[in-house]
Picture 1 (cartoon, rainbow over the protein chains, first blue to last red):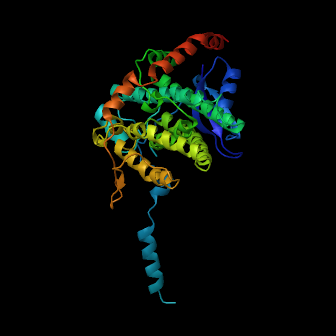
Picture 2: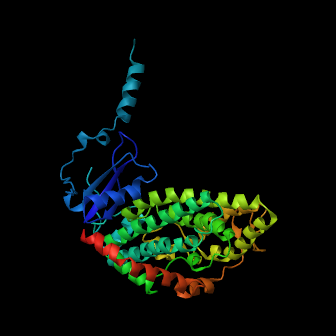
Picture 3: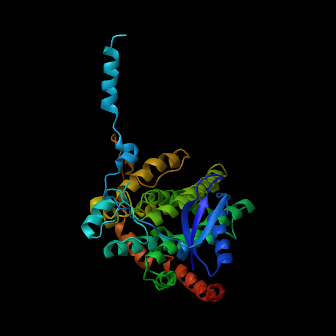
Length: 92
Length: 302
């Protein structure tokens, strides 16, 4: 069985994919993952996930322009400039 | 943001990787790309596995307990690299057992430097320092490999290699600060290894003609790697009072290193299985592969 190895470098950080090992069971997978990714104390924790257990999701439909939900949907530079100009020309 | 679609035809795929795009195991890829990946990565795995043999010969003869332990750790690291690398090859479609069978049958290649004998402890220092330095230059150029699973394991490999270089430099420093005889051992080893070291990065084929660069499996050309090696290490060699055995070696005002043309015939001869220690080392691997088959069988049956 193929186990994908995810490692966490320090407590609190995200787990990141590091590689994989082939092992007959989780016990052997752990032994090898410990050797490969933990021998020098370089990982705070490891996740060993059977490859078959990974539900892979890819591809997002983008038929509609949904930019209003994102930062790049807003270009405020020109408007901000104009607002500032109006503000400075406005009598106080 | 829409997910990046991996192009499904060869030309578009080529443009995708050339623009810095990366692919995963499950993505579509052209057959030629897959074949080149397997060839390149398998050769890297073979080199890690064969690369421990010259050093292994010195574990029992290391001058101190500290050196013995460090050398053992290095050998363990390199075998670990081979395991990671073969795993990547396996996912691309070539099982590890077949990689190993091709290796011991002499059908697969490994790096030129691992076909040579190690005469003295000076050779061990030069290998650990300069051969590993040359190797890490190649390996760092793989951190951006278009095949992402390979790039990811390269992070760990480069991290461990940096310890190997320091270990090698420490061995060299101990010897050049020792007796006259010790210093001579280092100089003699450097004389022996300079030729193979200059051949290591391959002939200066323009990177635009190098299939491994075209597919962005590696991110630099052969000559670029060699120049980087010379720029980084010639000053470090010379500051120790050692002499680089090439009278034509010089750095131009533009910062380009000129050198005597490496012996490309020797390189070709050696990597095609005719090096001074090729047969002996393959026989060693063959013996152990056979002797330890029961371990692999037992583990897989668990």
